[in-house]
Image 1 (cartoon, rainbow, N blue to C red):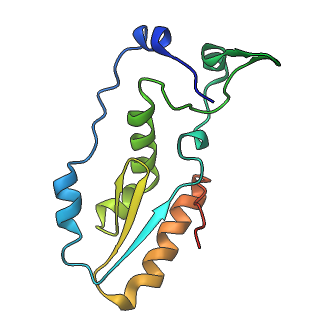
Image 2 (spheres, one colour; image 1 turned 60 degrees about the vertical axis):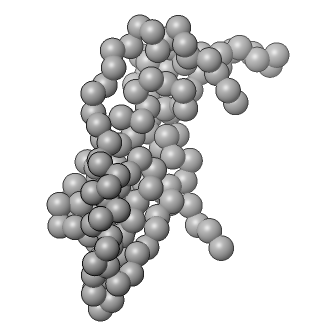
Image 3 (tube, one colour; image 1 turned 180 degrees about the vertical axis):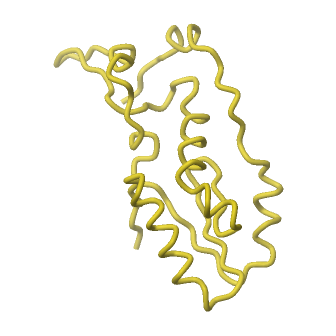
Length: 138
């Protein structure tokens, strides 16, 4: 589904929450023995919209009028909101240099292979606390 939010976005103030510097993210992985890449299921759609804001995302189809109950692609501040949510969820793991979070990409950094399972367990517990779901790939 593709909805044009141009008019809505014109009336939304810009969220200044910035992305991490990609060069710092990449450099932090240099000393790692193992990297585990985590992929979120349905990315932005895991973030609920306030009930009062849902009507602002409404769109019409041949089958009726609908609105999103979760954050949709195309909203002006979706990227900043998503980055803030991921960093809030993984705050302790980021601080302790266990993970790097860049929008919808999370990399678990293992500097010593003997700690990988504990690091994964800690990261999964943080994600579970916030009810984030991951995509399973074969």
